[in-house]
Length: 180
Image 1 (tube, rainbow, N blue to C red):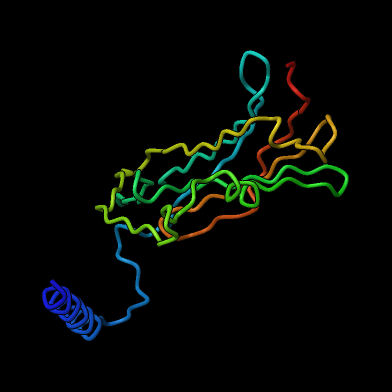
Image 2 (cartoon, helix red, strand yellow):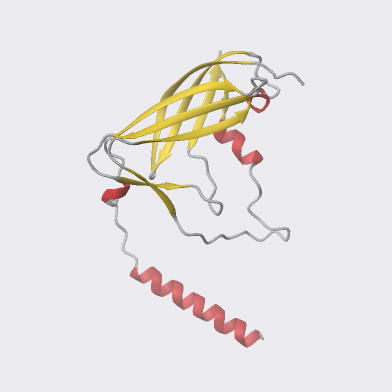
């Protein structure tokens, strides 16, 4: 059994070295993944029966003459490409700071890292077509125990095909703790 384990380990190591030696770093992005000609618009709203959810949406419009591919999140590589910042009077809530605390751990019960292997998924974005990406967050999580109810400015950023677009104004929202 130990001998078989050594053979598997040797094979994996040799395979990794062979693959690494074949890799040539390039900085050029393939044409179909480029984001040239994209236009971005953001908006926010408080939704739900009890106004208990903050929804931040970013619309990505392909204004180029070429079709593009946009990699999307999958069950194996979950991420939310929309980031939101809610600010008022020098107080701020940031979805990227909030998110790690609520995502599941990436280690198994014995402490070993969990590794996923999944195919890449992408959506096609034809010229003149748009795709909307959404972040929905409970208002109680945004206000937490440090932000008071009131009117807040929302700014958004979006990650598309490896490009981070920052500083999108998503308007203002009135946040208050939902009834219990």
